Length: 172
Image 1 (tube, rainbow, N blue to C red):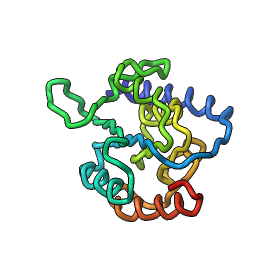
Image 2: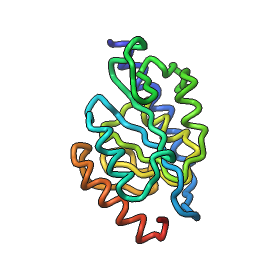
Image 3: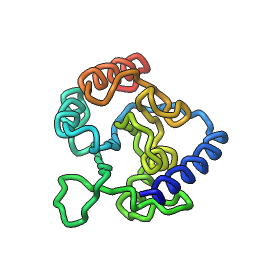
Image 4: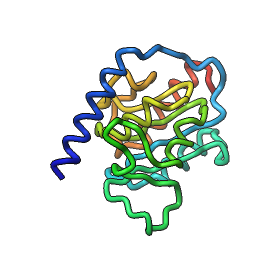
């Protein structure tokens, strides 16, 4: 337990130093593909969140979901690819191939659906090749291009605000 705390502290320090070199980017095309990074430790309504995205015009085939769990067991069956804290090494590198594939996919929009800073989630967000990143205001402001001020339990408010701003930016 203590070693996990030290590992998280070390990885966050590495990540924060690399965040000083972040360049701003903007979404120049409309949203077609969506990546959804969910922390299932605090949020259990992932299917309802996906249904909200579909209801707002995103095709189900264009949504790719990956789920983080604090207690990750490989033997459990998951609807979506899942990973845990053990898939992050001391250098801040991800050792799970499914997570690396998710990070390297060029989404038009990445939704970071977590409101508690965890080292592995922040590394996935930072390393993602997504063109436009959206997240919560409780997370480091340098990780996301659009920040929504609500909590994870209010997924309807989050999706309403997200699509409101995407329409203002002419991205839908």
